[in-house]
Every structure is written in structure tokens, then in C-alpha cells.
Length: 167
Image 1 (spheres, helix red, strand yellow):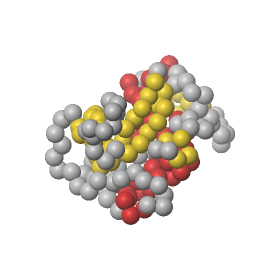
Image 2 (image 1 turned 180 degrees about the horizontal axis):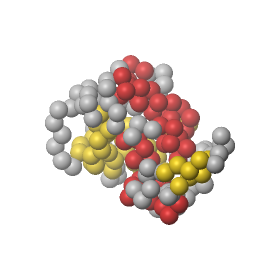
Image 3 (image 1 turned 120 degrees about the vertical axis):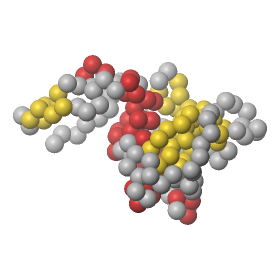
Image 4 (image 1 turned 30 degrees about the horizontal axis):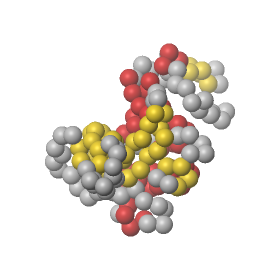
């Protein structure tokens, strides 16, 4: 199996009819999916699928997320995925919203990701420019655009040393 690297461009036309690997044709199940038009949409889509390996591949190398290295941030996402899987969740619902803090000073927009079975959730601010993610980070004063009911415990994205927030 060959190593794949992400070039920074998604080609919806090649999101493909078929992928040929070792002489075997495989259908790409995401062909034509509207969320896969740019990096932002793709990262959000794969977060919902709890496919952290794809999120890792899509995020830019050398960039920090939540003021930590990409590798450390992705490791946190793997731990969060394990919490969701352990609670019986197989995918996440995504609701738009933003930071409700009065001292933030900027219009921080993001999403609440909610487990399909457990109701556990986390809030993620998504800073972006021209379809590219410039930062991702936890928000502790997040408000969705529509009311949410049936929520369980919040999962705080934190540094790997603060695992108690993940429980």
C-alpha cells in the first residue's frame, strides 16, 4: 500500500468514480458529497464520521491548533473519538453556532458535535480563510443557533496532560 499525502486541493471530479488499487477497482463512497468541496468542509465531514485519520491527513503540517502542535491536537482528537466510541457513538451530529463570551472580541464561529447515541458533545471554533482552516480550538462558552436538548456530558478538548476533561 502506498503512502498518500494531501496536496491541499480537493478535486471533486476525482473524488471518484473508481479508485484502482492493486488491480482492484473500488468505489469511493464519498463521490460528489457536497461537504468535500474544500478543506474546511472535508475536515468537518470527517470529524462527524469520527475518522480522525482523515482529519489528520487534511490538516496542514506545521500549523498549530489550539496553540499546540498538529500532532498533539490530533492525538487529543483520537482520545475524544475513543470516548465517543466507548459511549456507543458511531457518528456525530453537527450544529452551527459561536462563542457567547463577551470578552472574546471577535465573531468566533464554530460547531457543536453531538454523539448520535450518548448525547455527549464538544464545541469547536473553526477559524478559516478561503476554504482553509487557520485554527481549531475548544470553546467553553459556546451557543448553538438552535436549541439543543438531550445533551449529556461535555467533552473538553484539552492538552493530552489534562485527560480528566475527556472523561
